[in-house]
Image (cartoon, rainbow, N blue to C red; front, side, top):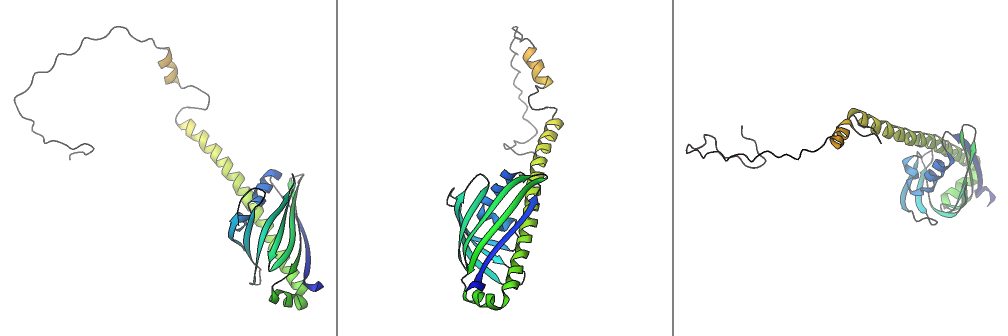
Length: 216
């Protein structure tokens, strides 16, 4: 049934390095954290054999369930096979470009779920349009996730410097106290031991205190 066959291509630009984009895409079990409408119900993160069971909610409300399995990786491309309500393959390619990284997604699948195959007979174009909306969500979510990751890294660096500044220290710079301590000569003359205090026969007027407690 040719109307149950779909081929998609989508492309967008993100303000991030290619390595950061690939790291985000390799974590297939984490797609639901940044891709609206996508939820992972199980995943395995073994390098070279990553896979995840995903549920995708289309804007119209219907859900598509499938398994995504890693099928190959190069320096700029990730490939995966799909099985379930949709069967086929997809790939992500990244390419450095002025202003960031170009992300290119391709997918070629066949609808396998009976209701989806039936709907494809009458609503092929409408279902393809739903897929385009899902990928727009992906582009927005990816940009937001990469921006948040970059901001978190910057905040961590700033917090480290603020902490060092408030304590009067900086990485790699000795403190004035440590410098004086190192340069001050130690005295070889010792004070004579103090004479023991005479024992008083008058009992103390305060009761005993327990360790770690403060009497009021």
